[in-house]
Amino acid sequence: ALPSVAFIGLGNMGAPMSVRLVRAGYAVTGFDLSEDARATLAAAGARTAETAADAVRGAGVVVLMLPSSAVVEAVLSDPAVSEALIEGSTVVDMSSSDPMSTRRLATVLETRGVTLVDAPVSGGVKGAENGKLTIMVGGAEDDVERVSPLLTTMGTARRAGPVGAGHALKAINNLLSATHLLVTAEGVLAGERFGLDPAIMVELINTSSGRSGSTDNKFPNFVLPGTYDSGFGMKLMVKDMRIALDLAHELGIASPLAQSAVTVWERALKELPDTADHTEIARWTFQATAE
Ligand code: NAD
Image (cartoon, rainbow, N blue to C red; front, side):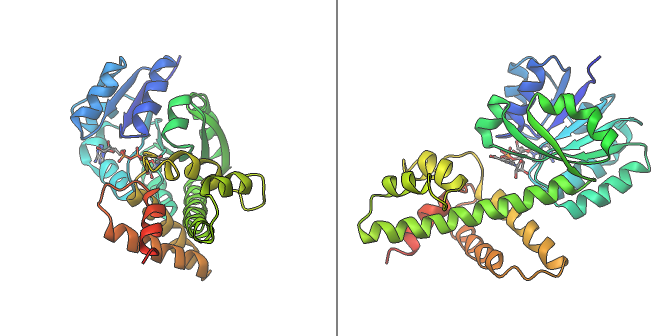
């Protein structure tokens, strides 16, 4: 039988991901602080709870899709949640969390007979809707195997290593992705000023060695049309870059390019509204460099 699932964090990503679990036949109980988010999941036929502890009570698998490690830690250290977690259950943290925090949490949960698997994702809101996410999994092999049917309803899951490995890989992926996006904006701006058409530039780069997720997805879909609405917040992207850079520093790696990229992104984040989409880094670059 399919395990009962508690799903906490029903935002841009958690909403479509939890709906896929419901459609695959899982008995899902969802919780989010936002009442609107709960209503969206309820409309898809799932149960929703009034507290995280009520969602978690009795669940075989607890999926988290929350903003950050700070929130994940706050939810899991709530005494009511702690008490509601059943022995033998698995917590699957699909948020882009800090791998150091994940390792600590795994140790704490283990003392209570609860397993932690980290399973962050790439592929955006569209990938979440279509079940086409890339899922980077960290955990002991048998723990990962146990939750892999559930993960497969949301995308392609691949074990990266022991607990924390998924979160480390995801942070590094986003550091690359954010750095590509920033340098693509700088390059396109230079080309445009030289007299090139940005659309032609991006098209030709996409069959050349400078291509990336920024040239084949973010520029054509969100930057060049001027919509800047990918559904992934700038604040969340900067959080991920910070995790990767701090990790590098902790490991004794200076990472001068990553350091510069983080400095620029953090400046943009400070100047833009809290709700800015991460693709706004390109518009900000075009404007900041325009004078
Ligand atoms: P979001 O801000 O849209 O959703 C987060 C949800 O968590 C919100 O609905 C919020 O109300 C809820 N929440 C916050 N604190 C809570 C608490 N204490 N208890 C219950 N609910 C709480 O964020 P998102 O874009 O869905 O991202 C979620 C995670 O996935 C982040 O770690 C992000 O970095 C990562 N991610 C996002 C994308 C994307 O394209 N949006 C892609 C890959 C990974």
